[in-house]
Length: 142
Image 1: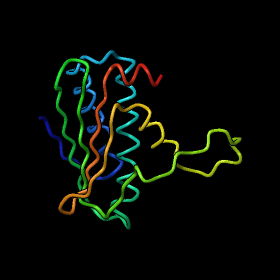
Image 2: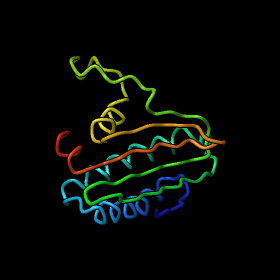
Image 3: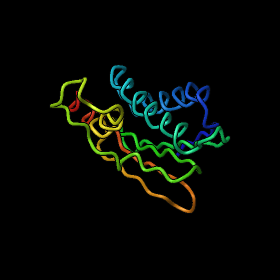
């Protein structure tokens, strides 16, 4: 398992993205599918910076990954911010016209579509989002 710790702030998104990009390469995901890993990370990371550490608190984000087999990537993104489970958000009603939809929720909806599995748990003061991404899950979602 490889791990990276970064500060929960916008300028940490780039090193976090590079870290998971190297994970996607290690898993043997083709270049176009690596972009979906970037999108998943960005959505989850932005939610942490917005909701886990309100009022400009300095916090950290730990990112771990493993490659159990070629084409499969297991990732955990964890923070010690306030409780926030992004998976509790209701899926947006895609049948509504854009102007009739409430703002928000589409990013997490896409994260759920692109992952093979995803779960949240609050563990000893940590928010932990674990997910699996495979070439198969990404190809079937696109």
